[in-house]
Length: 213
Ligand SMILES: Nc1ncnc2c1ncn2[C@@H]1O[C@H](COP(=O)(O)OP(=O)(O)OP(=O)(O)O)[C@@H](O)[C@H]1O
Ligand SMILES: O=P(O)(O)OC[C@H]1O[C@H](OP(=O)(O)OP(=O)(O)O)[C@H](O)[C@@H]1O
Image (cartoon, rainbow, N blue to C red):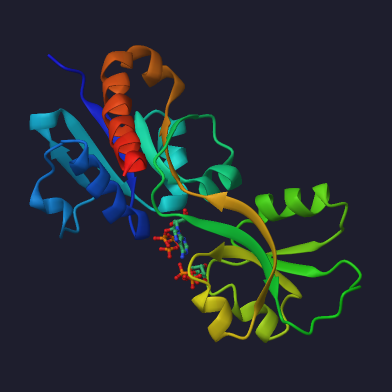
């Protein structure tokens, strides 16, 4: 009997891209993946169990071993710093992290305030730049912060750039490119290596096929 692999999937933006990728790799995922509120989806024909989690929580499930594998944005992996291995860059849900703010902001603020959903990434970035900042953690609508005077700058995800533009903000610095990654629990990787390597191989084949095009 094949080992069952439990995979933590991020709900939201990445989900559809991740499902498409698994289907392209030849895994038969039932219609529940297209429209369902279920948080656990078993696919016995493929010996998979999927758990549907908040994107920021995926590495937590994998670190604790309740999921063998997970799909998470590089932004989440940088912020969470969990004890997991990154197996593959899936090259889906591409975006980047940037420092942004108002176009006419004063340059020499003393310890400027930085609003972000990514306090650890932001703190590490400004530390490396030798700049002292005060980090303000928000959970969304980050672009509001400079508009209403809560912060001088923001560190946030940019994809099309539309949110910055429509709120009259500009990008100061592009920090790091983001794509989604396949991550694994280190113990699962040892115990279920055959199945996990097969999954990685099938996903890598699509990647190389896509690159040839
Ligand atoms: N334009 C984008 N904005 C935010 N995240 C993006 C974008 N494009 C791709 N991503 C990827 O999608 C992930 C976030 O997905 P999503 O927006 O569904 O979750 P979330 O913001 O954590 O959820 P919620 O809005 O429920 O708090 C990020 O971790 C990032 O890797
Ligand atoms: O460059 P764009 O294509 O405009 O995408 C970037 C925006 O999308 C995300 O917000 P989200 O929609 O997740 O809402 P949130 O503010 O609730 O996090 C992100 O935080 C930016 O605000």
